[in-house]
Image (spheres, rainbow, N blue to C red):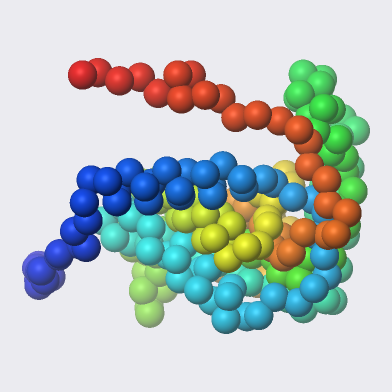
Amino acid sequence: MEIKPFIPYRPQRISEEESIRRVKEFCTIMNERRSCRNFSNKLVNKEIIDSIIQTASSAPSGAHKQPWIFCAISNPDLKKEIRRAAEKEEYESYNGRMPQDWLDDLAPLGTDWRKEFIEIAPWIIVVFKQNYGLDNAGNKKKHYYVNESVGLASGFLLAAIHQAGLVALTHTPSPMDFLSNLLGRPKNEKPILLVPIGYPAKDCMVPNIERKPLSEVAVFYE
């Protein structure tokens, strides 16, 4: 098997002080990120979406297989179809599929089966995971750590969206097979996230919630 050539890797060297300043600044920026359901219909330049997806695709992946596809949708008719199908599934989830404890946990966030943001947001990115690859002859090519890899890429995606001054929502209508059908995706791909992207509406409101402190999410072994 051919071994890929190696190239020098020399990331920028910065002082400890600068490192602390940068990481604290980035932490502050990312801590301002919130899931948004109230979007403006203001257009977003496709060049921004291109760079967001390229950033997401820079995430690490098992054996560098990059088992993800990002479908970016701005077509109004297609967004309308996606909304109709998503609301159908969500209505059934909120009215019988979800157990009561799940509904109770969602209640303080004010969510329901209506998903008008799918049509209002200027862009939607649907994240697909590739359970396996396909060569030009249609033969299967194994992928590794698919869920972990696509999860990392999705995190990069959200960070890039926030860095661009945009807002997003990680929407997961279940089941999501309708997205494969509407977008004509091949059998080796499975949708995992529907992410509306845009600017917040002028009257945008979000729940007043707090994140866990460092002491509750980290354990240090020194």
